[in-house]
Length: 359
Image (cartoon, rainbow, N blue to C red; front, side, top):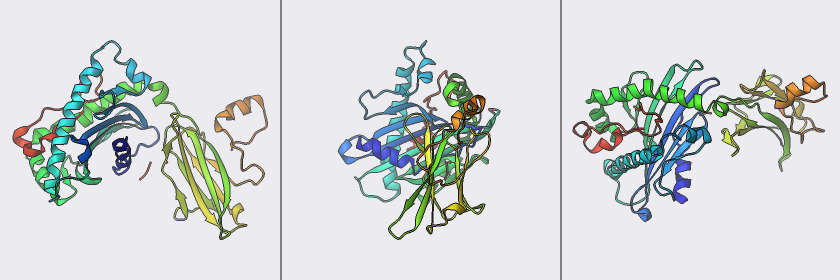
């Protein structure tokens, strides 16, 4: 459990590609962790369509198998009873190759043996609303810091640190290696994503509008904080903007990243501080693709504790019942495509052969 918690923390270090309203993405996140107490490094892999995790593998878990995490992914392969067993073997192959590289990396950095180290890979693709290729991404990180990445436009390797220059020269010297990634990201990844969107459309293409409210909090120094909170929305892209007299207060706003609520929806808040008595000058603007138009909220002393559910607007208008309607920053041609490795190229990669396996 400690390793898994560390893995979740490290995921936050890798900057993920943004998915704006109407676009969709397929992402794979793989982490190898060396921990002296573990013996062999632990390998964890998770796969996402948009904001939804659909499969995972944990070499230190109870089952030690690649497992589906959502019903639609499990149903896709009911006709192939050995599918998940075969893909588990693929995960173990990827784990071995990434773990081998992890053992080499401390030497590149002149680090002494022992200690906790991590090696991560994040890759995938994003499609436009019409499901055509938009961009691909491939990044590696060591100990939470960028190591090397593939430029999505030029398809040239970029070493983030001097220690990655050797890897960069080897990969650039093997055109087939880079071309293989280009084909995967632009062609096969897109086809896999389309298939997933088709099979999981009931959950993946839905839009749940947010419910939102503004609350007031007083600090010891007498200053007031207004907090605008949104929840129950999907997908996770949302914008909460505080305005004073109609002007956006970007620099003075404190906010958190959009977070999963644990029930398939998301939540987020943004807060702004002010002297007491200035509350009436501030409004919160909420923008989400599930809303027909942006919401504008103010703090109302008599109703600040009441949540106004946007999802009931249509019912309210139809029944004529009185009511008040009350963001993510910063090659597989097989059937499933969860994890399918490319062939290793020993002659080209040398000690970096582990980096060539991909889902």
